[in-house]
Length: 364
Image 1: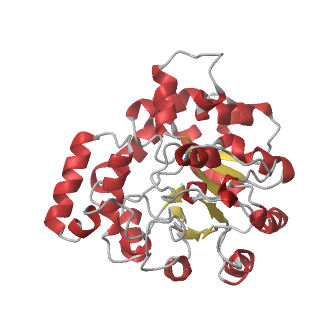
Image 2: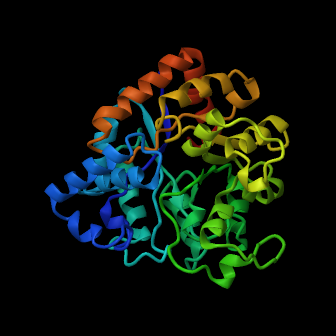
């Protein structure tokens, strides 16, 4: 069966800023023995990778591979021959966490080379950040001349997804049938580190100056509600809210009783995305199960129940959020197979073969 993993990463430590981890961790992890000890300790404290600590440990693990190609070769070995992978670059150059040794331009170039080596397996997306000068022209060149297949957003690095500088790219993507993939879970392991600017605090829809803490502001950028203006303005633009609201919200959904009087900030993002899909008002809205269902075995059973709804099932994509290396030897294949077994072959085929064909569009 043709299988598509719609959400993987191949970035290395050279693509992360020098202050991505708190001092003195960046200096210490250069030494393999120290690195392995820190990873072991983080996994001992956070065995389910539910917090930033566990995610940082996984990023450390993968980041010390020598190249994107090396990361991809490890990933590829955990899936059947012929599996395709949507590879999502990470642009951390503007998150105010220090210098990035290999910028996003080189990361894109290396990803294009990876696609050229594995043309049947690698489906590259272009990372976009409206704060880069010439972002529209640069991205269109990747789409038209380097055969990149979609747009990758990561708003917690410091921008609203409806930023007006991105509007031409959304129009282009809608016109050419190209999909968008965006991070949608809390807390994000990659976030802007500085004091938000006036530009960041200005709501792109209302023009209101938002008096929020940095964390509240970045969470607002990531909230499913932040995409309503985009979905309303571009109803044919295929937008995937990755992670289906996030592992933390799935756990809270299972652990806490439903509160109809909860404040908007307390409403489960899983619940929000479900409501958006079930409403039928956003016919091009998608979500994926990356990281979220891999993080906790109980989430697989919740997914099976959610996918009993045909409307929901038609808008969910299989993805793993692969960016682990040594840990992947224990988890990537095991959890993929567990998901397949619990869902059953028919449902798994829909989310891992049929739905990706529709999401990626005719250019696939």
